[in-house]
Each structure stands twice: as C-alpha cells, then as structure tokens.
Amino acid sequence: MRSFLLILLYGLITESIEAKYNSFMDAESSDIIQRHCEGETGNNLTKLLNPDDFFAFNSARQPPRYDRKRLTEYPASGLIIPSVFMAYGALAQVINPLQRLDHDTDKEVTRHYVHRPIDNYLMFAPVAFVYGLDWVGVKAKHNFRDRTFVVITSHLLMAGIVHSVKTMTKVRRPDGSGFRSFPSGHTASAFTGAHILMKEYKDISPWIGVAGYATATAVGTLRILNRRHWISDVVAGAGVGIFSAEIAYMLLPVFHRMIGVNPSKSGVVFAPVVGNNGYGLGLACVF
Image (tube, rainbow, N blue to C red; front, top):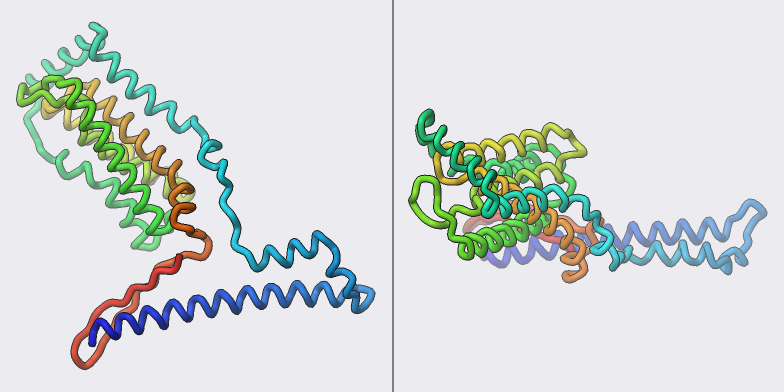
C-alpha cells in the first residue's frame, strides 16, 4: 500500500509540473502569435513571414542548447594557484633548502606542541557547509543535484591523485609512523570542500569562502603540528584539493549533456505520504 501511494504521488507531482510547463509554453506562444497578428496598423498576418519573428516564436517552444565549446572555454586561470602549490610540494622532495624547512619546522613542533586530533573531524566542515547553508536558506549557486555531482567528482579525483602519489613517492611521515606522507589527504579533502564552498556562495558573501579556506588552512596546520605531515605535504595537498574542485566544475556541462538535463527547468520535490496502514516520503525529480 505504501509503495502504491508513493508511485501515485510521484505521478501526480510530475504530471502537475509537466502540465504547468506546457501551459506556460502555450501561453508564451499564443502571446507571440497575438503580437504578430495585432500590429500598430491593424491585423497584419504577413508579419508571420518575418524570419526574425519566426525564430522568436520557434525558440519559445524549444529548450536552450548547451554550447559544446564550454569545456574548452573554461578559464584556466583557476588552475594556476593549485598548480603552483603542487609544484612546490614536488620540488620540496628534491631541493635541499625546502627539505631543511620541512625538518626544521618539525623540530620546533616537537618541542612546543601537544598532539590534538581535531583535524580528523574539522576536515569535513567545509563540505558540510556546502549543503548546510543552502538548507537554512542561504541560496547556493547550483542546485542540489549539480552540487552533489561536483562534490562526488572532485572528491573521487582528489582521492585518486592522493592515493597514487602516496604509493609512488613513499615519503616517511615526521613521526615515523609510515611512508605515505606526501601529499596530505586531510588537507586535500578540506581544501576541496573549501573551494566548492567559495564557488557556490561567493556571490552571497566572499567571507563564506574566506571562512572555508581558513578552516582548511587550520586542518593543514594541525597536520603539521600533530607531526603527521611536512609543510610540503600540506601545501601540495591544498593544491590537489583546489585542482580537483576546479576540474569537477569544468566537467559539469559535460554531465548535463550526458543525461540531457536542462538546468533551468529541473527541480526536486519532497512530499509526505500518510495512509491508514503507514506513512512515508514521496520524491519527484524533474530533469
């Protein structure tokens, strides 16, 4: 019975949304025809032969198409800073002055700091706010579906890069607990979420992005203070995180084309279902 009610609710919601959309498009088309037939000089049906007006009428019935060049036209400037960070981390593995900076910093940390594992939890804060702010009424740039695609894609890419580099480089951790120090996965994860947070809410307030980056920086600092990573590990991890988020946003138009989504007319509707034999939650997703 509960399944039947959920299926029925889904059908009613999607049918209602589709009907409203068709009604809106029919009204738009009728308005265009009326404006063609009722000109300033009276009824003039020959205006329908105007190519520009015909294009306006036809475009009212068709959804916009995505430009296939958007991926190649994505501004590469967003990749400059993370590339510099990753390059620093790589150079620090072979340049003596940068290696000395890593080891001298670790010596100072050993003398003056006590281990605090808060970084294991703080790393998730930026990505949590990507969803949390929208749920409390602060409107994100992209809808839930697109944000989820960016979050999943960026974290999968980030995890793949971090795991591959750790396996290849086998850098010893400052505390000697293993040989998977470079780059910092905690820092990469935190900066992935922070960069997404900035991209989604920068039009609302730049301070939201600043708070996200500050949190991610705190995670990286704690990884150094807890002697789990060298400075170069943390800098490279920040670069990997920002880089992964940028690539995910570059792939978003490709994702739209693959599933045939028109972002301007998509949405998600939740509604409760209550019956004599139970209750549930209905979900309708319009693509």
